Image (cartoon, rainbow, N blue to C red; front, side):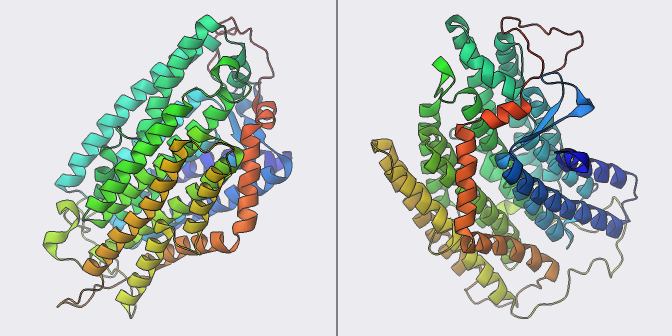
Length: 542
């Protein structure tokens, strides 16, 4: 990339950072200004991500080195098919969640928009970074922002769930640092492209230490991905979060999936010598166990937010099991499933709140009290600001239609994108020369997950929407309907353009299996002796 295009790679990090800094200087009463600024930044992120995706599709992976320092000393950002796809997905979820929050949820606490944009910055940085240490930095940025966002709306249950969430993620961060230290002690570098060339050269006596570091690092990522038995915090935490926060949190588990996918092919791919295929069996069986746990949770759940949380676990299990099995066709299918399921879950989290709004007080989700939107941080809100929005006729019809669409997507019924994704997964499993028993188990769990989701969603729809009630339905704002419609519309577009999208996923999977382009773009311009575990330049910072 040359000229101004070369700086596009840093914009997904710089844009939300600058916008959030600007909002910190604004008074909390200037909500309209903050909404316009944050929504404008989120819309620009979609445009930037789309341009980056188009460019790397045409020209291959591109690297951006801050300060124009050579790798591996520079802070390197790398845009390739996988990272730009995740950027675009994150930007879409961020924009729709912010749009939904502007109906009223951004008034449930202070600094909502600044924290939200910092969360997007951390997620975008995690997808773009080409260095494991900087991956840790971006992880901490997104986690710090998520700690504040999950507390928005107050309530005892939110506070309790938040404390568990914070404790678990601090422990995972400690594991992250420990794993990074062990890997660096063996290889002397944390640049991902540099590591890809070093792993195959690692002596047999150091290989065990390298794999130990990778295993500890993997546990940290698996906690964030929600793998069983490290996933008990996730359904409760996501249920406690406010709807727009839970909707954008749908991408949080996929950050862990992304890192596992990226490092599995770079560090432990077919050219990694004795380390090739490291932990694949662990990923497979842990993914199958997570799918089973998530299916049981879906059937047992009585609140829609718990159903959505356990479906997140099912999707994580499917993705991790598919990574463990491997194969280009299965990798392409899991990428399609990742995009479709994340969009559908995010839409479900947004539609749950207006559906639950019609529930009796004793049925409110896990006892979480409705937040007071005339908050003490900024004083009384003028009457015209507290209006939820104009009344839309046929509230139940609109909610019911969107709810049914979400149910069909998540269950994987034809002809929607959820069905295409699951069909592609099953077809790829059948295409293996030898179909192992684990493959049959995964196929059965994929089918059972769809059945369990259909049962749970039908039961919830009857209870919440289609059982006649004494009171008239609550009002539904255009601001609430629009982002739900946008997410479902993108899912519909995935179905219509399934052929070109799957072609893109297949090309992405091929690039993952042959990471030469990534390594060439982001690899070191300066060679460091592999036997040197200490930095060759004073002040070196990976």
